[in-house]
Image (cartoon, rainbow, N blue to C red; front, side, top):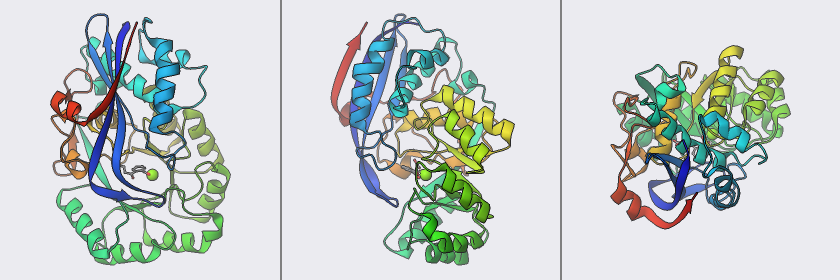
Amino acid sequence: MKLTNITLHYVQMKLKNPFTNSFSTVKNRSFIIIEAITDDGMTGWGECVAFDQPWYTEETIQTCSHILKDVLIPTIIGQHIHHPDELSSFFSPVRRNPMAKSALEGAVWDLYAKQNGLSLSAALGGGRKQIEAGISIGLKKKDEELFAAIDTSLAQGYKRIKLKIKPGQDISLISKVRDRYPGIPIMADANSSYTLADMDRLRELDQYGLMMIEQPLAYNDLYEHALLQKELKTKICLDESIQSAHDALQAIRFGSCRVINLKIGRVGGLSESLKILKLCEDEGIDVWCGGMLETGISRAHTIALASMSAVNLPGDISSTQNYWHQDITAPEVTVSKGCINVPDKPGIGFELNRDALEAFTVRKEHFHA
Ligand code: OSB
Ligand code: MG
């Protein structure tokens, strides 16, 4: 394929409910939606999932816009591409910036699958027809709000519940949830809010039978996570710390984690995600697919990835209606009895709702070969 036209749609969407984690409350989301058109007239879609501020990882929508416009798009526009894996050699002179790379690569994977008449799931090698959905629940001001969110999630059949925690909103929160919902599968995500000085608290959290604790320590510290994992029986899951297959290999070898939260954007795309899945399979590490409070486009890519057999736990792949009054895809992502059907249509398997896309677009930029 030859990419002849690329449009960046700068989109702004308001979350149904603010989402609070240890560092930030997200109310509005900005995205860059990538529309890539080939010389034979096919259209592929990608999504940049970076946030407005660099609290999660260092990229932001602004840095991604710069890297896409000034570096990545000029490198690949007009080039013949046979397989999305080839993008890694085009991008090899560019250090990091995984979310920017992934946004463009996602559109190329969609095109590649469509050109071969395959669903994205099939193009990746995924076999599942249905995936299990988990849900991530943000920090709430009142216990009643948290219980209400858990009740709704259980009623919708979500297979596991992830709770955000931070120092001071942790032990009492988890113990209340455990008392009220004794048997349910729960895990906690700290988004890097603890240090080794919090060891006593972390040891206490270790007593609640959590499926795992996600990213307790610094985003860039594999050594301290390895020290902590030795002290805990609860599995440590890494999120922010894993930005490539190389990071994943180091984390596994150091013993920094027993589980990986795999996010396509954070690791630079689907090709890199497949390498991480292979590694997890070979090393016996649990792995599941995370989310970024994203639109249906990125969710569609994630659903395809989660259809791979190496993904062995339910991910943060909740329904459109959990986050948005209106999404930009048709159909929307729906969860039924805690499962999501993997689309079998060519490509990502979701169409763009052009009216919704236009309604949320604040600016567009065009590039052509
Ligand atoms: O740490 O997994 C995270 C949302 C935004 C940024 C980071 C995280 C999250 C979530 C929710 O936990 C993921 C989702 O449901 O999309
Ligand atoms: Mg996380």
